[in-house]
Amino acid sequence: MSLVASAPTTRKTVLVLGRTATGIPVPATADGDEAIVVLAIGWPLTETQRSVLRDAEDVARRARVVFDAHLLASPSGVATFVAGSDRVMLDAGTRETRKIRRALLG
Image (tube, rainbow, N blue to C red; front, side, top):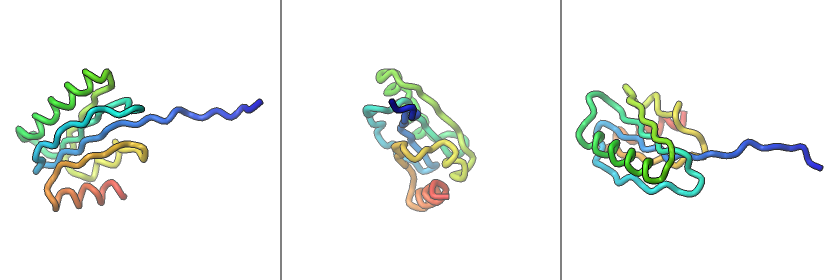
């Protein structure tokens, strides 16, 4: 008999919305997704960021998964909310996308 136990793996869909977000469509949750997390960078939120935020909340409600949103001052805080198994989608301009990717890679 094996006494090895493994923790269940969880995954979330993380949408990172930069200040220059263009309004990516929120994807449907996939099998194994336990949450949709929106990370909005900058204050005040742009109308585009607000729109994606509302859409993400609607998708999470319909899929019956956790919805979580965080307002970040800069891309440097993004990595705190992303795990290796997460599905990450970036919505930002080219320069901002590079900064976000650098923050994710550490």
